[in-house]
Every structure is written in C-alpha cells, then in structure tokens.
Length: 200
Image (cartoon, rainbow, N blue to C red):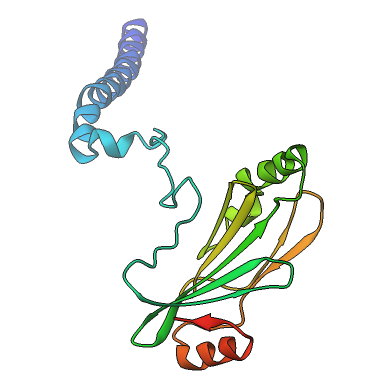
C-alpha cells in the first residue's frame, strides 16, 4: 500500500508539471497566432516600417543663379560716362515712387587691348565666381561682346542685405548699396543728377 500511494503521488506531481507545460505551450501558440494579426490591425503597415527612407527632395531654391525680376515696376534710368570711358547706368525700379529694385550697369571698352588679353577678360566675365551667384536678393550678370564688357548688378531690396564675400584668390569684396527698400526715389534721383548723371 505504501508503494502504491508513493507511485500515485509521483504520478500526481508529474501531471501538474505536464499541465503547466501544456498551459505555457498554449499561451505561446496563441501569442504567435493571434497577436500578429491584432498588431496589423492596430498599427498599419506604413506606421510599423519607420526606418524606410523617403526619397530625397530637392530644395525649393533654384539650382541656377538667382533671378531678380523687376519687369512689373516703373523705371527711371540715370546714365553718365566716366573719364575712363566707362559707361555707368543706374536703373531705379519703383512702385509709386518707392524703390523696389536697384540696378547698376558698368560697361567698359577694351578696344585697345590685344585679342589674347581680351579673351582672358572674357573668360573671367563668362564664368563669374560662385560667391556672387549665391547672395540672397542679388543677381550678377556679365556680358562680353565686341571687346566691351558689361557687368550688371541687380538688387531686390526686399530681400537683399549688404554682404561680404570671399573670392577665389582670398580677397574680400563687399556687395552693398546705400539705398533702402521703399526709399523715395525723388531724393535718389536728385543725388544722382548732382553727380552728373542724366536721368530719364
């Protein structure tokens, strides 16, 4: 009787272990079978995949040189010839006499230079240094034809701020003008005429 009761107790103990393992197995099986669909319902696919890289977007800024557009404004053009035969032309683009865009054109003749010398000047003109092309509210244009070089600087006074740039040779250039956005152009025109400009 004693042996039989011990065997029954051992059988009872083994049964409890098996029961525990059975419950654990059911829980694991349920986790693997039930939880993934539940997670898919709660978290859509696009929310789960968080490490997916979005395609790189291009910046809003234009890739080429900055363009200053003054086509919608009225204009006053002031012009004079320097003793060096350089022609300076200033354009005041305005709206109701308030300055919006300031344009300065400098035309220099190189008729006396050799063709080789002019080709070097022309190359510098055709390929302006990059710092001039990256200034907010500023457009730099250089045109070389018939041994004449015209450098045009256009300032959108709403966005432009006086700027110091470093050129390829290490020299420093200050890009600036003495006028302000919405400044009355009557006084500017008067000052230019006092400096021997002819304004129309």
